[in-house]
Image (tube, rainbow over all chains, first blue to last red):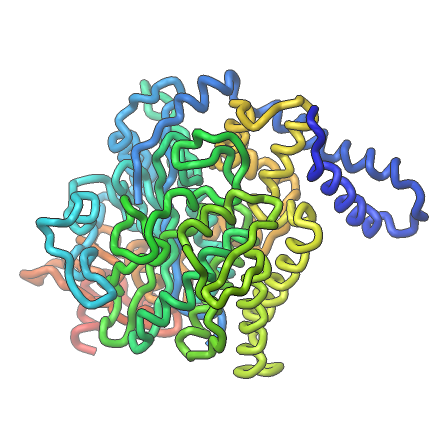
Length: 69
Length: 503
């Protein structure tokens, strides 16, 4: 996948949150915590996978609206 | 003044029958509204009272001639489309080709969130009810603003303002705020341009559909500041600012800050507190550019020549608001105003340093996190239909299918209210506006209410030759405090009308 600056930044940020939540943990387990964080996003994606409509291309093509206000 | 004022929201929901893109939108929208109405088990359905509606009145002081108006602007002509007034004081009806939920009038942004979220619940319930009719294909509803093929539909905010405030002051001080507030209130969108032709992510659902700075239209040549001047209240005292530029939000914090910060800025305008002119160059183009840059680095050029980011421009407003509230209230500030100010400042600070930390608070950041996760895990690019589907399905109102709804149920979003409070607001009106009178009348005297609107309830009672119209022109009256005892002791509508006309 293409280099993704924001993805990296996102992990760093979430890492800070993780520090607060697991406060007693000494710094240095950065990698472990990053893995935990990406597991968190992965588990969210897994849950979304289960409910996403099948055949995304047809589904979004079929969503046609008339204009409103 | 503070964040407190009479306010409300109106949301047109996206609607579709999966597998049948040609389904008649007006018809299926009517099915949704009628299904919900039928579930209320009422013998009589009150019609909407159009007497006080003036959709062609312009805040700049003239009326648009009816014969040159676009047909879509004639919202006061009853097209015979489905319409129901709910016991929570809201209106559920078909507007153009979408089912619309117009919330009851509330007094503060926290209540605005509660009764706006009640609308999502009502739409989900309506969709469930409609699907129970044998032979009916499921109808999906989406709280979003575009089909990514060129069509947009609105989610409007309404704020009651002092009539004495010159409209030019509103335009001058509010335009830069609206150009920049999307960094807080955006719902996020996959696709750039009205028809989503260019691939990429942008902050706002609605931004690309705005083409002019000021105007009366809402369905074409959409203006940043809408001039519709239809106060649904005493026009000598009030104007209703009809805001059409917002995104339909699902995240409670997004809705809360959208309503709260806008109300606060309006208070500063009314009290002429804004000391610096923050007018921006080319506001329409800037609005688009800010939306198109989720890195938040896009610079906005002010007419003064100063350049700053949209987040910094919001900080200017936030800082002024903090001074304003300090000046007016000191430490006596109410909890909601204090909370809005603190959250606003906190959100802006983090948008500057670490935007992705807001993925549990703001819609666009939450959506962006999911999309970036998919791009990374599955190697998808922005032209992927799967990403477009995530964008769409984020706003699906069904608890089992909607991505926001599912993630929220798992506690992934920060909240400012509870499911219990929202569920209660589905059937019950706010207690501190005229919506209380309307909602209670619809609940207790349903069979005697011939019609109702924001500023009236019309009764059809035995023994009276004509219909009895009770005007409710003052939005701050008809509250629980004013009318609870009266309604409690009036067993029938006849009793109520007698008490009102003789009392």
